[in-house]
Length: 378
Image (tube, rainbow, N blue to C red; front, side):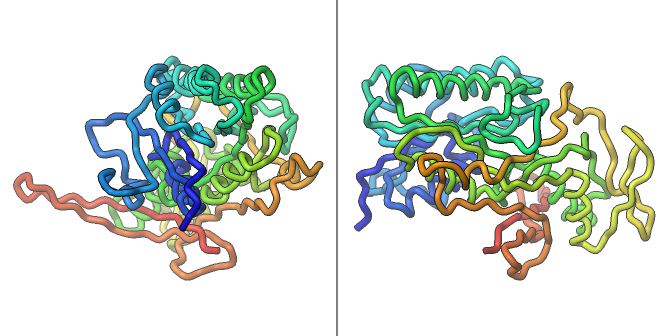
């Protein structure tokens, strides 16, 4: 029988990281409570396989909640009495944060404050550990490369600024009230359930669509941006390890490698046997098939951010070296490489193009959509 003495509350449980974390904690014997926003459409696809009828005994329960609703958050923490809180809920799309800056600040920044205040008001400072999902976007206009826990922050988006407020609020509550509250500064991490508007999924889905002749090209913004991409499952394991430390602290989780969006595009197209050659400059640059001359990639300035972050690369030794209190033993992050191979590789990543079709009842209307699923092969 698993020990259900540990009780976790995960905000943002229906997201990529939340779902993976819920799986991990359930496997470790936790009772897991997940918070999800009310929606007129189903938004639980990533956790449906974990859900059971609440009338039956189940270690996984869902609750309606919102990071902008103080009374709701206090009530949930009071009722659940979690031993660990993982705050993953956020408006996490950087480009969208320029369109919705006030909401992003409210949910991502003040939302964290509301949760920390709930812990303090309810007198749970000594019994509840708190994990804050921080982000490499806080580094923004980077002052050094690679970035570590001591690298200065200079965010370049409302999202990065809101997350920076949440980061320092977490540090402040740790120091002022003795909370076991830690920040995980996570660099980009991906998986098959990554949102389809994020650039990695956007590229891989487009490659699949082009391969199946459902589309002829993809439109992107800054293809020279460089990111440190890892596997989401590795990173949620790191989140859990952070809260198991005796002393709370702030940690960078990264692979230590950086690759450009341009390189990601080339690797993805190579998996369907198409080599990209680049012609033109700036917004007029295009990616062409080296054999046919077909235009496969175009630049759309609509996708440019008002302020860009050009390079993010985490300092891998930052979480493996140092004194014992700061070490996350056995944690390892691997670079996520896009491939379309369906056979196992050497800790590589495979992307399998699958075609899913759905029929709808309106007059025999039949729609097909392509999904490119990314999964890590260990």
